[in-house]
Amino acid sequence: MALRFEILGRFNRARAARLTLPHFTCQTPLFMPVGTQGTIKGLTTDQLEDIGCQIILGNTYHLELRPGSRLIDELGGLHKFMNWKRALLTDSGGFQMVSLLHLADITEEGVTFQSPVDGKPMLLTPEESIHIQNNIGADIIMALDDVVKTTITGPRIEEAMYRTLRWIDRCIAAHKKPDVQNLFGIVQGGLDPVLRDICVRGLVERNLPGFAIGGLAGGEDKDSFWRVVAQCTAGLPENKPRYVMGVGYPLDIVVCSALGADMYDCVYPTRTARFGTALVPEGLLKLKQNAMATDERPIDPTCSCMVCKKYTRAYLHCLVTKDAMGSQLLSYHNLSFMMRLSRDLHTSILEGRFPEFVRGFLRAQFPKGD
Ligand code: PRF
Ligand code: ZN
Image 1 (spheres, protein in one colour):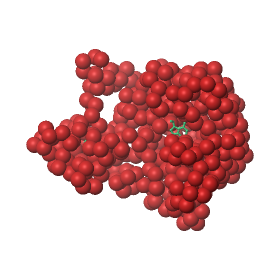
Image 2 (image 1 turned 45 degrees about the vertical axis):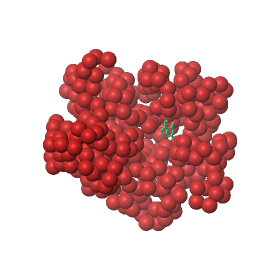
Image 3 (image 1 turned 60 degrees about the vertical axis):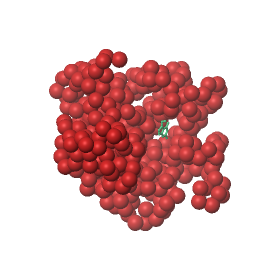
Image 4 (image 1 turned 120 degrees about the vertical axis):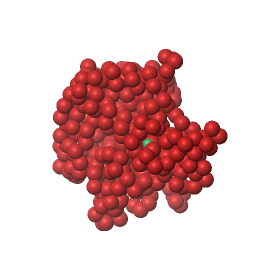
């Protein structure tokens, strides 16, 4: 195992922990910004360090297409290639292919898809995904899973869950660097508590260094989503990190942390920035609105990030969607917001004032109590 997970404080099911990875020691709960081609769109790695980012996510599928994991390996791994000294996590690639390419098809062997480069049929097997991720060299690598939308019903959900369990053994067997890279298994099973339970037990038996809860945030209602997270965290070992994949919105991170989850990733803060939206304690601030044109305040007067210290809403209104600098500055602020949220969760759990923090967060987001 190439990690240490020490719980420093708890509040009911919520945990504040220290997660020691080969490249960095992180504090949880934590949010991981998503990079695709070895970059978080619009930000330098120095800026990511400045805002307190501890671990970022890379996508196996994108990196394999360009520049290719063999080249990354030859050039000394992704950390060196992208000049990022802190922790990295790579996702296995299957989910990205299925969600991006409607041409992807899943068989027992792996995920088949047409190369977006030359249209040739390609196959991503569990072995190949792990081999690529071994080459990329992230601190945490993810098992190849069979992901289905939570909004479908029928036997396909059960098939995907059992296949995910069969594939985990192929991933474990293919993993050549367990001393320096941590392989996380992914719980699938849709919204079915029986299937989720079988998957949790199956993965726990494999004694992996950490576990992810997958297949969520795909259009199901919040109640179903939170119920699955609550069930999975209850069944996963206390002393291992729990990662809810593809989540999310600030509210979901607060709720999932209360339910005992530790790690999150989502494109939302950077994507919404590119559409001109800033995350603020009250919810969302749309910089495109005409009212912003003469507003001399910072995005968020309570935020101490570089953008809020130096620029007005009026200036950002002028830039958004017209100049790349607009998305860059908004991404910088939005990720700063997520980092502050992660820190606030950690310290409030540690200091025994988690309920007060959650109440304050909810009051700001839902002032009318709805
Ligand atoms: N599996 C993988 N990556 C993911 C997910 C998943 O279930 C999600 C959840 N929708 C986001 N990213 N491998
Ligand atoms: Zn800010």
